[in-house]
Image (cartoon, rainbow, N blue to C red; front, side):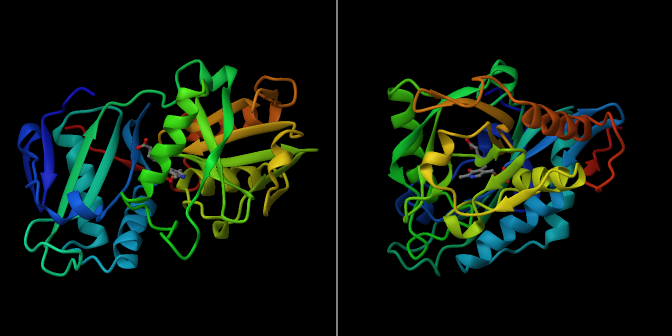
Length: 307
Ligand code: PPE
């Protein structure tokens, strides 16, 4: 990661190296943070942030779920992220908003710890590698499950959820896979450590419902919208593990992963073992919009002034 100049903290810009917290901040012991990941793309009409309002809304939703007070409005946080990209003079980048329970009192009860708000950004390339976008990645089904619904709420993008993600990702890596797919508490397909999943068979797209312990992905929503527009039938349903083995195509979606094809699961080739036609079509529809090659017909892009 290459540092950028400024990070936004509680309403003002500070130097990258000064964005620090005390080690006894509540978040360090108890994992009490919520965050986002947002991409800004370099379009022909200048830098543009993808679905900024929806990401910021999800950030505030995550805070609400955890009863975390946020001293800024949605609109203030939206404006601050635009300003962040502008002051750092970046054409394309990844924005990481973080809300955390800071320093104050010790103990699990968080009320005595003020919420700290940080917005940072940096340049971030392809999450699963450049080649993955055309060739696809080799993944496994993890022996770790996603958290049960009455343990950690999956609709919140909370730091603590990523302890589970780390176990999935490290295991996959040690076993020679690019990523792991976790099943939910009932044994149905849930999601990757940092991606939602789509399974195609006989021209129909299937994705797990929000009740399958998945993050309500904004890329997921975008791809569902693009698929419906293209007239490809989509269903949100519980997906049995073995459907991964007999699928024609599978792909991941995520802000970091964008739309990444999967070419094998547990060493079983997916379809022909390479990126399939539906995946390619949706990938193209996605990148045409985010890179500004076609009209922004859904109002997904927020331009960043460069002057
Ligand atoms: N599920 C999980 C568990 C997840 O972390 C992400 C995003 C998604 C689904 C896709 O959601 P969305 O980005 O709204 O389409 N993961 C973020 C963090 C990746 C990281 O390594 O950090 C991301 O893609 O930005």
